[in-house]
Length: 103
Image (cartoon, rainbow, N blue to C red; front, side):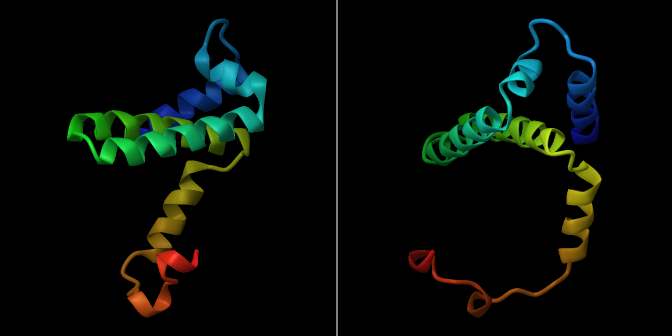
């Protein structure tokens, strides 16, 4: 599903469709896309305090906008998948991470 969505987003970038929200984002450029990613991230946080359906909806929105960002930056979804696979099975402990207060 994510691959299909990513391919459709790339197609819209290459072959704009009038009235498309995806094309609107590409036309406005990186700053607009980043603003939407930030907004959707905030909405995921808020939805996490509410109900699960709202959380699902907001995660879907964030995922879409992240895919638009990847397409804008010409980063393949397969490169993200490869990075996740590279990390698979690696142990991480709390000592490997900064405290949240330190960020």
